[in-house]
Amino acid sequence: MKSNRPFSALWVCVAGLLVALGLAACRQVRQDPDANAEAQSSARPVHFVAVEEQQMREQLDLGAKILPDPTKVFRVFPPASGRILAIEVKPGDNVTKGQTLAVIDSSDAASARSDYTKATIESERATRAAQRDKVLYEHGAIAEKDYIDSRAQSDAAAAELARAKQRLEVLSINLQASGDRVPLVSPSRGVVLSVGAAPGEFSRSLETSDPLITIADLSTVWVVADVYEKDIAKVQPGKQVTITVDAYPGRQWTGRIESLSGALDPATRTLKVRVALSNMGQMLKPEMFAAAHVDVGAHNAIVVPSSAIIHEGQRTTVFVDNAGKPERRTVTTGRATDGKVEITSGLQAGQQVVGDGAELLTAGAAQP
Image (cartoon, rainbow, N blue to C red):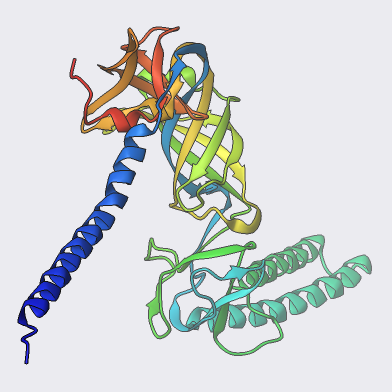
C-alpha cells in the first residue's frame, strides 16, 4: 500500500500560502481607508480672498445691571407698633393697589378707635350747645361773648374729630369694625421684592429703618451702565442704546440714554449712565446682568473673513499669499461683526489671505 505523506505535505504548504495571502489582503484593506482619508485631506483646497477696506460701525460696550425705577419702588412700613399676625404675600407675588399685605395686632388701633369715639361724642355735644346758645343770643338771653365761646368750643371739637378720623384712615382701620387688628395694604400695584418679617414677630413702627415689605412696579425698569472717563464724551443724553441681557441670548432691547450721574464713582472712576426700558411681560428682573451697546459712529477699517483668523494662545495669525505660497503673518484684531474681523495692524488692503482652509496649513506653515 502506497503512502500519501508527500501529497499531504503539499496540501499543507498550499493551505499555508493561502492563509498568508488572506492576512496580507486583510491588512491592506484595513490600511486603505486611512490612506484614502489622508490623501483626500491633503487634497482639500484652500481659497484666497482679498483684504478689504470698508466702514465699520463703532460701538461702545458697557457693563450694566437691571434696576427697578426708584420712583416706583414702595417700601411699606407698619403704621402702628404691634405683633404681626399674618403675612399675606411672598417675594415674587403680583399685588394690586389696596390689597392686604399683612395684619398686625396693635394696641394703637384700640387707642385710635377710642379717641375717635370720644371725639365724636364731644363734637356732637359742642355742636348742640352752640346751636342752643345761638338761639339764646338771638333772643337776648345770653351775652355775645358766651355765644362766641360756645361756637369756638364746637369748632375745636369738630377739629379734634377730624384728627381722630384721619388717624384711623392712616391705620387703615374700618370705622365699623371692632378689635385691635391693623391691615397693612399695598400703596400701588407691583411685584413683591422682599418680605422683612414673619408672623409672630413684634414690629415697632417708629424704631425700625427696615421696611416690612418692599414692592416695585416693574412695568418700566432702569438699565444702569458704567462708563469710564475717557469715553464720557461718547455717551450723551438722547443717544440710542441697544441692551442685551445674559439671561436671554439673542434678544435685544432698544432705548435712549436718559441721564448721566453728576459725579464719578470714586472707587471705580466711572460715571453712571441710565436708560429706561419698557418691560412688557416683566422679562427683565432687578439685578440681572446686562450690556449696553452705544453706537458712537463709523470708521474705515481693514477687514478679513473671520474664517481667516487663527488663534493660538495669545497669538493671532493669518496666511498671506507670498508669490503663490501661503506665509503665516501675525496680526492685531479689532471688532468683529457680520462675519468680518477688523485688522488694526499686520495687513494692507488688496493683499490676499487664505479665507477657507487656513486651519489645514497650520501644521506645515513656515514661521515668520
